[in-house]
Image 1 (spheres, rainbow, N blue to C red):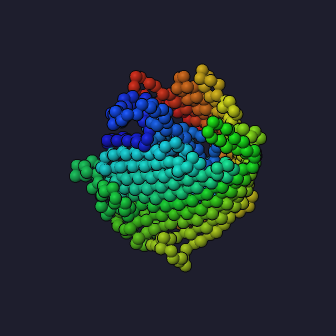
Image 2 (tube, one colour):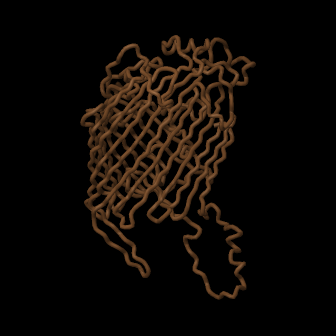
Image 3 (cartoon, one colour):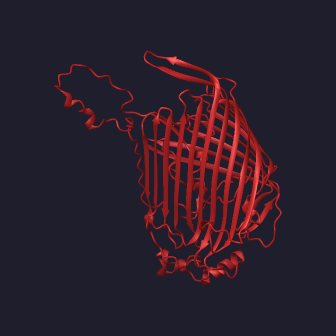
Length: 555
């Protein structure tokens, strides 16, 4: 990627001596002020004075993880994965090179072009840290393209942690009406009672996505070869042609393009029944608790807004584009299409722990109720004006589903087993289901680790393919069957060779896809095999990462 990139990582209170073996001058001469004070006592050094212990977990796992400080893969810090392609500037719509069908049953709005830039609850981290810890990331690219990410976490009490994370992506692009401006927010908080029986997890996740749409370069003339248009921002485009080109960081206006907003608030409460114990030291008592049964309640409120807006759709180029690409004529000014959803989910689950000293072995069963309301608007207004219009299309619905899960990570850390499933009993997505299982084992450094697994999903096509959606442009109603996808996979990692081999086999029926921009189709049964190898090479202080991928497709 062209440009200058600057990455800064700051850890408050955290000195990494492997990378900076020379201690600061202030540390070396810390005791000089006290020399000659008359004190003849020797102070005991606190081994935790210049270090930090930090770990995190995800909401739906009990396993703890450490921060990854490796530099093998730059995309760990960069939002666009290496196997994705996008429209040229950071923040624009992106899609994976690899075939990956939607493997999640149930309701789905259907807007995924900007998913890689979003914070999600599935990836929200709940930290435990002995000291406050912060990270600051900053990247600067061509034409004032900027990426800023801030994260801070600290334990308020030993049993109470809070964290906050913010990310800004701003990229004006090379051509007109290509600007992207994304803001992401994430707040997490967890607290556990002193007797370790009650735990509360809370998080807020919000994303504001803005991506300009140009419709491509106008092909009426050979502008690409014209030296008068060597400055690409002057080149005529089909949509947003009258949009000024602005590289300002705080100018977030996108007159023509997509604007996606989502807000999610989640609270999970857990209460355990089991056996109390303690460890008695010389001067303290450390309480312990071994759970046998856990009751859990999770409530989630979410709001999703998907808007396309064009402030001036009546220009000559825009009129031709909308007519030729989508069959849209005589558009109002401004032209807007919007799907707005509100979701409320209540989930109650029960855990049982067969081995009280291994909380990573458990059986979980539960039932959930999901309430949904959608507002679909075609016209010049938005739902943010808080007014209901007579031509709004409104739908309400619900789902009742059951779910179960079994996990077992053995005490010696050698075996890791997982089986899960859920079924939608009644509601908008009745008959949808997910089922999956995996097993992973470590055979030592000489052989490595192996993971095998499968998953099968039966799902209702995303709601964007429903005729109620404002983004449904087909002249008539299309009857779609449920998508069914089976996925078999295997991964082998050899740590001595730094080599990873993986294989994925898909068997897919009724796969939904688009042609000619808006025409909805379903594919008959087909299968696909992916085989990949990934190798890390090290030559001195330089590290390179290389991969090989092969596709085998059959119908």
